[in-house]
Length: 317
Ligand code: FAD
Image 1 (spheres, rainbow, N blue to C red):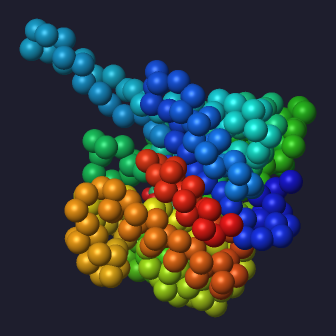
Image 2: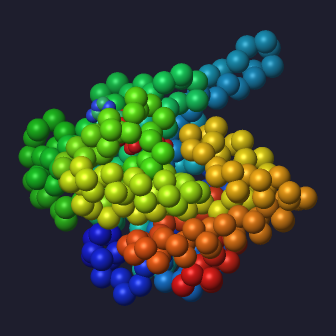
Image 3: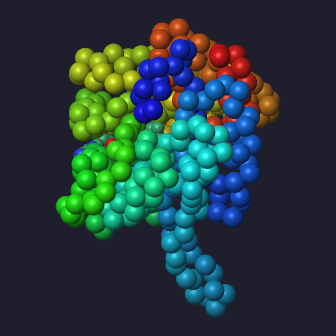
């Protein structure tokens, strides 16, 4: 069943979460523990993020450095397959423009099809750390929309060079990202929604939001996109606040605001345990209001916060 159908057919607000593949060499057991911590809440699907390779410099000890490209978190496809196989829960690997040529993407699609994984989240991906703005790979794409076109063609039985696929498999369905507080590179919200609409018209069946801590931003965004004729589910993405340093890290990294009430309460916290408790309480209130207002699904960003998500889920499901 496609993600959008899983959400629509869920008798209560659907629960889902995102996991990062393990750091290279650290094994998959921690990921299994994370899934098992959250299994009791009946996750409808699990997203697996993708991380582009970055340049690293190895000190050769003779005053010289060797530059190479490294993927710190490889394994998105394998993790998606391992979790599907072990828990029989649909997995949604993230497919990026960033760091991938169209041929690379084609090989990923072939692997996924063989594995029976046909739900994707289509994203441009973050820029490389050494670049000041996003630079596509040679023979790659600048925007998620172009990746959608490649996947649509693949679904129609065409490789990226236009040649026919002899035996096309099950088609892919997919969602995309959206930003209640605007994507950082967009000149304004109207322009950002213009491109979101293009992504939906191209075939995205739902959109998952960037994290937000102020529900009003989500409600205003949904009202605005509906006026523009975007009618797919807009799935709220919730991240539990956990550490005092996130007061500056979250706005810096994700280009979103933290509400003054949350910031003021965080400043009263004496340690990370206090901040974690505050984050849990804040997310519970956010989720309760979102659910009361009839959101189709709540999606959790679990990085470093699986135990917080468990506490939140206990209170809302
Ligand atoms: P796009 O849709 O390409 O949009 C990027 C910018 O370009 C926006 O300002 C948009 O308005 C504009 N735009 C869009 N299409 C066009 C066009 N055709 N022409 C001109 N302008 C256009 N990053 C990772 O690296 N790995 C992940 O696993 C990952 N998972 C994520 C999951 C979610 C739910 C979210 C919200 C984000 C995630 N990100 C991830 C971060 C994401 O990759 C970045 O925010 C990235 O900068 C933008 O991705 P996008 O798919 O929204 O890009």
